Length: 386
Image 1 (cartoon, rainbow, N blue to C red):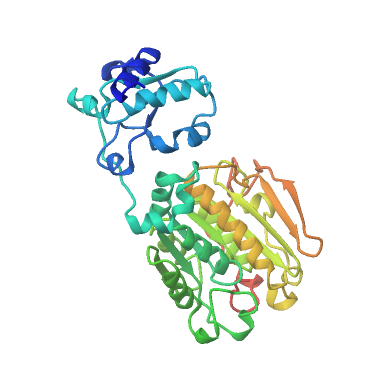
Image 2 (cartoon, rainbow, N blue to C red):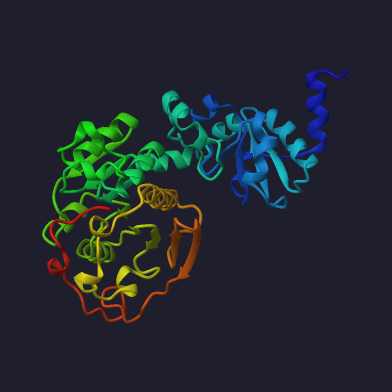
């Protein structure tokens, strides 16, 4: 039976090795197959991490095209040699092993980087995200850096905020000027009987922080208006989740998002029906492309007037959280240009294609609305949030 050294020498005659300078100039996917503690001490810029023990099970998700050039590397070039042979047996056509590994790469003065890494506690908390190739450690770090502003801490804002917090979105902003009322508790799951009478923003903040202390929560206990919207958006937000239950706020959020270049995940609910879409400024339609002006007040009842099935905001708010996470991660296909409709009575989803209106008064080629408009005449009382 051959020794390890003899087997290694045999394997190296069956694979292709490449030195650092040649690898640097090659357009290829660099795969670091070292252990996690080695990876966190430094890596080749742009490399992905798949530990040697997981190489066979994870490589197809990272490199589905078996003709794609791949450079495997470890510390000294031994594990990567065995890995290259294994990938060849799996049908990969253009795999090379980095001779001398990362140690020789550094010795040659080639570029390296020290990756940000999750500590042990975060790796445990987000372990199910780390198993997903589209998320992984780098994606989780993106989420921890992400900043999402929620308009409303009511029916839609409650599930959206809780799932965003659980996913590890690092900063959540909550705009809500209402207090927790007993009628809210049928659907607004961020609140409880213990917080009756408290500001919804404060109640939601306490719930979020108890769920995930990694999340920083900024509260704005004020109604969103033309006077404060620029100030609030100036705090720097990547995505807006709109859970407003009134047209004045929806139009204000839309116009501000277009002028600030921030995507909006829009959701609305009524009785048994819900809808979700994404408005990406200058890439897809905005809210005014669909509805250039608010409808008359008598044609725009709120949930307080018409009612809503308690579970419906959970479904729609969760879909909003899903869209916000995809935007933060830069993965998947967003609902931009598509309006997703849900009927809770029939348990059916349907979809409507939306197109950007070149004559839109806000995002069109020749905008006619260039300043904020407070449609207060369309508000019956204080703005509600689902």
